[in-house]
Amino acid sequence: MDIRDRFERALERVQKAPRYTGGEMNTAIKKWEEAPLHFGFCFPDTYEVGMSHLGMKILYGLINQESWSLCERFFMPWTDMIALMKEDDIPLLSMESRRPLNEFDVIGFTLQYEMSYSNILAMMDMGGVPLEGSERGEKDPMVVAGGPCAFNPEPLAPFIDAFMIGDGEDVMTELNRVILQRKQQGWGREKCLLELAKLEGVYVPSLYQVSYDDEGRVTRVTPKGEDIPERVRKRVVTNLNDTYYPEEIPVPYTEVVFDRIMLEIMRGCTRGCRFCQAGMLYRPVRERSMDTLIHLAEKLQESTGYEEISLSSLSSGDYSCLPELIRELMKRMKDKRVSISLPSLRIDSVLKESLEETQQVKKTSLTFAPEAGTQRMRDVINKGVTEEDLLEKVRDAFHGGWNSVKLYFMDGLPTETTDDLDGIADLARKVVSEYFAVPKDQRARGLRVTVSVSIFVPKPFTPFQWAGQDTLETIQKKTEYLKKVLDIKGVTFNWHEPYVSFLEACFARGDRRLGKVLRKAYEKGCILDGWNETFRYDLWMESFRECGLDPAFYANREREREETLPWDHIDSGISKDFLWRENEKARKGETTKDCRKGCNGCGLQKWRGVCGYANAGCV
Image (cartoon, rainbow, N blue to C red; front, side):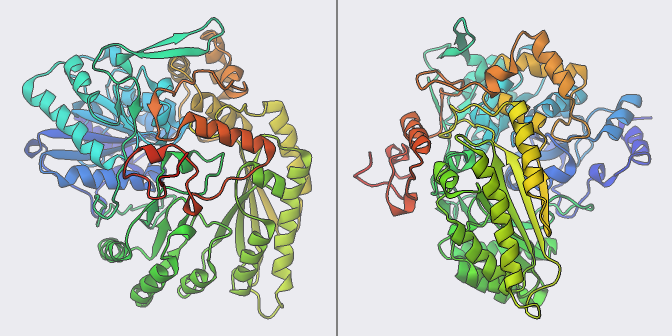
């Protein structure tokens, strides 16, 4: 019985077979022998999560539109399928042609979340790919990775041959061309890595040496050759109207996390929230034109049949023509019963008209992110909104017929006090009061206010990258306190698992030595660490101890200003001096204006033609 037959037999015994069957509408099926380059796109989490990710859909279509390249998808199997694969000796197979991972020329992982790192090792292992770059031979695939976590590539450095830093649309094609040259011209791995390192936005970790001091802090990251750049500068797509965006996307047979059209209306954010890594990494702001968006929306709706379009960005309410865009989309989609949803709403955005337009088909739950319960704390994080901003928007929503509101907060932010935790509960009560202030015969029935509190994780390239995370003991005490004060009728309280957030902080700010911890934890059985039912904190702590490393050194330690950070050789475009100034202003509770109101001198102004908000007077 061959591999495919054994795989089909496993599908009959697995819980959720549609995770693995493939064959979805709009899948790209290309003949293997007609494409000289074969790319395996790996999402290191389950199918339901991966098929909700916009970046995968963009790059999947981008690679497959080239006649010379083929892209097939791989996802992390769930535990029941993994057991069957081991039992029947089935390797990790692609969704499209059922080929093993190690038959591809290049395999690429998207790095969206630090807690998926063990899945990367598991997928390579199941696919017959040696785990570390130093173990791979000339016939093994090149292993690449990109995404927001690639901005601190060091914990994964032993396992990834090359990282793509920044926007992926342009650099992906350039990288694939280099790897195709390797295949056609018979280059060795070392020659290929040297050529990849010449591409702007590509970091090849094996070409750099890391030095540490006696206390374990990084002192230098040094290139091993004269032609290797000291710092790797991120790639930026300057014009979203001209760059690739798919007009067809695979449509799952089974329910996924975000089962709808995701229309990226803009990229980047000018607000400057000090905790937000994405807001710093994806600068500068670039908007797609209304004409482009309307064209894409119509094409995607025709090709998928979806009945919801989500206007996606870091801050959708900041799109300069949002009311006009929604009005035009509703005009074209209303008869098709297609709804428009607005995720990532800024509390102070001009939303009333937009909300009235989107409710014409159906009302979806509204999500707001005050992030902190008091104005003092919102000023510390530079959120730039007030309590009245929130209450005004909630008031508009309840009067407009909404009855479901989600509020997102963070716990453990720098300088946080008990008063700030009390403020979360106080704000929740005021939201409930706004609902009951609407006359009974005019409000929607069944109030639902969901308060979700995540644990602050200090991230690279943010003003809080020097901050330490609260200890586990402190986090647990704060969570218990919030459970007590948020015991409010009409309010549901959701909180995050502190042990997961602790480990996330370790890898978010980790150095290259964490690679050995990661490998040891995987060998002990750690996989699917982002899922509570499979997370094994005890095995992770065993792995740290056996490797002689202290997780608190990475997660809880306050960094000094002059310390060399493990990611300092990556150039995000945002200067370290700017981030430190923002860190100091946070400690004083001082705010920084939105970039749209004048340049704050973040560093992007030195990149000619990149930042539309820079001016001659930049600092």
